Structures are given as C-alpha cells and as structure tokens.
Amino acid sequence: MGTANIRVVRQFIDFKFKDLNFVIFMRRKTVFSKKSCFTILEMLIVISIIGILTVSIIINKQSNQGREDLLNAVKTTALDIREVQNFTMNSSLAYGRIPCGYGIHFYKNTNASGYLSFYEAMVAQGSACSTDKKIGSEDPLKVISSAIKTVKFDLQNIEIDNIRVDGSAFLMSDLFFAPPDPIFYIDGSTGKKVEITLKVKGKTCPSDFCKSIIVNQLGQVSIE
Image 1 (tube, rainbow, N blue to C red):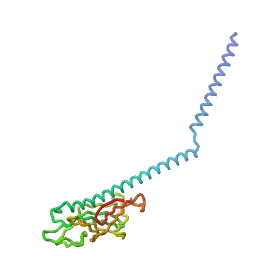
Image 2 (image 1 turned 30 degrees about the vertical axis):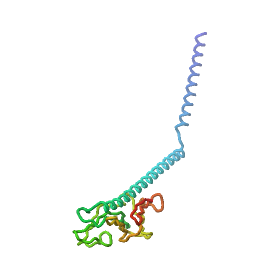
Image 3 (image 1 turned 120 degrees about the horizontal axis):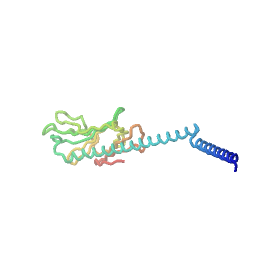
Image 4 (image 1 turned 180 degrees about the vertical axis):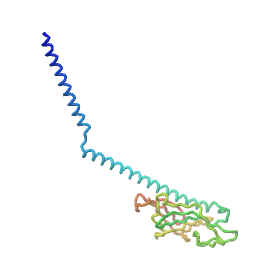
C-alpha cells in the first residue's frame, strides 16, 4: 500500500472516531438534560406535597401532645383529690393544729381555671369547726384555712370545660372531707356527686380532647 493510500485510510479512521465521539457526547447531553431538567409545574407539585406532609406531621404532633397534657392533668387532679382524702383519714394534726378537714376548691372564669387544695383547722383547742365546709367562709377567730397546693390549668394548656354538681353547672365548687370517716361534702352538703370536665385549651367537648373526673356521693374518684 502506498503512502498516499495509508494517509487516506488514517484520515478516514480519524473522521469516524470524531463522528463517534460526537454522537456519544450528544447522547450523554440529551440523557443528562432529560434527567436534570424539571418543569415549573413539576417543581410546584413536589413543593406542595412536601408542604402538605409537613403540616400534617406538625398538626398530628400537636394533637398528640395536647392529649398527653390532658391525661397528665386529669391523673394529677384525681391524685390530689385522693391525697386530701388520705390526709383527712391519717392526720391527727393539720400542720400542728387540730384538723377540721381537708378540701379542694375548683374554679372557672373567663381568664383562668384551676384548683387549690386546703386544710381547715381549729385555731385553738375547744374551737368549733366550720359547719358549712367551704373554703374562706369560717370564723377566723375559731377556724383557719390555708392552701396546701395551687394548680393553674392555663399554664398547662388545659382548662376546665364545666363543673357540674348533680347535673347543674357551676363556676366553682368546694370538695371537702371531714374526719374521721371521712364524710364527703360538696359545697357544704352531703349526698351529692360532682363532675369536673377538663379539656385541651381551645377545643370543644365532647371530643377526644376532653376527660372528666367524677367524685360520687361516697367520695370515690373515677376518670371517664
């Protein structure tokens, strides 16, 4: 084969290689373009889906947290009621004074709701206990009342939905236990039942965001 022929063959081969590289480059560019380029509509759909999922997760987390806060508040309140019962049965002296009993005062208003547990004790030996079994209404010369524990539900994102005594609604109520049995009083009277409904703040009842504490005529405490 002559020199001229060899030169022609080499030029032909070089041309074919260049042509092949160009085809591979264009194919790679086309594939890359197809894979990496999104339309504005596709991007908006993806962003919308991510937003919806994020909002759903946040709402679900808040709902679960609200139910958990409600359950903790209800359990704590029921335990505090049982605690004043035990104080009445087991305590011979109320903070160094002769006991007349222990109680819990529940209240509900437009700004806040909660309760305080208290004891009522004689100022001195021979003094008479209050007959109405309510906080703050005794004769200060004979009987003294003092708070043991104060709870504000609004600080826990919880509020009292209603306070019902024998089915009638009230804005406040006093539960009182007088020794030694103890005898259970609701607002100064025996033989009544009280139902205190708590809810997650901003929710409505009845719903999964509400629970009730019931104290029956015998002073037995239950949660519904």
